[in-house]
Amino acid sequence: MAERDPIKAWARKTRAQRRAGKDAACTCGEQRPFALIAGHTPPICFACDRIAHGRGPYEWNHIFGRQNSAAQVRVPINDHRAVLSVAQYDWTPETLSNPHKCDLLEAAARLRGRADLLQYMLDDSRACAERLERRCATECRHSAGDEPAPPLRQNPASETCSASDRSRKGDR
Image (cartoon, rainbow, N blue to C red; front, side):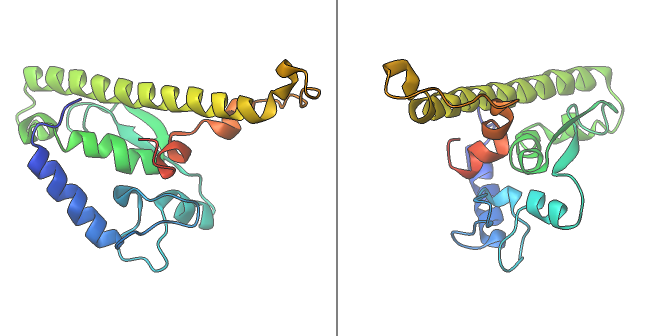
């Protein structure tokens, strides 16, 4: 979805980068400024911080905005902070807060939320497909007759397809 105000989007990203630190990156490779905990030295992302504290790296996202609906989806915390929440910053403040519980603004929030979630899912699917294709280039040499195929894992996609992994590597 196009930025409503590219100057404000740039300013938000610049502020987030300044809070995280110049060229900051977590040891896991995450470098999106909205996914890094501000002022933490050494830099650490929200996912690694949660794991270090014995919690899972997921968070619930109010896809239509908390004021518009109780509906939530569980997503990787770094993607919640760096993709989905950032997308909501581009909504009109009235749509996101909906102070008078206007049905039309709630409908607008539902449309925006669905669009943001679908875009996130499309980007994640595309990156996953590319990651699998790169993996096949190194692991599927059997198709050329060079050597036998490696054994199949239970769920190879789960090891290679994560929006968090993709974005850490700058595929976004």
